[in-house]
Image (tube, rainbow over all chains, first blue to last red; front, side, top):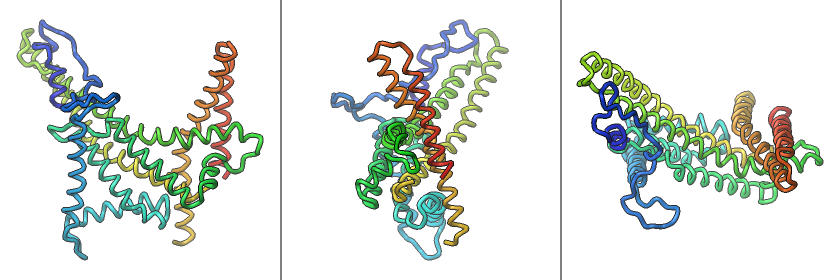
Length: 285
Length: 73
């Protein structure tokens, strides 16, 4: 965000409010989410190697390093790092897997913990100075994760109940008279096989996309309005600094709020994954 | 796990499932039957006759599904 916002706000020298140039405020656009590729292979429908890949790798390294450093010397009486890791695992076990799948969900706990931490690290990249790009604000990343859960959901259901029973449970709602089935079966199919995985990925993508754009807007507005040496006089200069301060306070408040949202969205993604897997294990509803 | 905590877990699980499937049922009903209505309009040369009928049918069917799967059960 940082460099892009500076370019947007300061692309025209002298473009500030309360001066003779005006120029108008240029809000950050979706171009923030299409970084220039460093290496473009020219393949159709691909973005080449760009900042998203670098940030995704950094997120992966941070997630892996967290586990390495907190668990490399595990003891019965845990240290600070190990306690943090155990708290995270315990929280996800009690609030996610056991709530949705019961004790049987424990076998999915490693997956859920890994997913949570990886998604949280990808989200939090939006707040790391110098990187400032949440990986999940690119639809491709949440899409792959949601697709993986969708495939796993089918695999778990098929292994538990068999192909016929799994798809019957997902397509034919129980307790519905036969003559209504032609009306409701397409809805059930669309709901389970298209809309649910789509909303699963879009929920994460859209919140990260919108949150990042909002932060960029506050930063660009604060930068644009800051003009203490306004040619229109010291009063206007002071006023511009006041306006800028309001935007920057908004930026700080929303940064804190965004941090909360990043954790919540990682949790929601994992919770929904767990609910879907629990449902596949349960069979017909 | 005792009976009370199992009932509590089941109840919470049901609430979670309701919340996540409700929107997909509503969207699915409107999208599918609205789409069928739109195609029927296009194929039969009408403008805006079957689309609202399809949307209405989809909405009613979605609400019926929500009722049978998550309210009545």
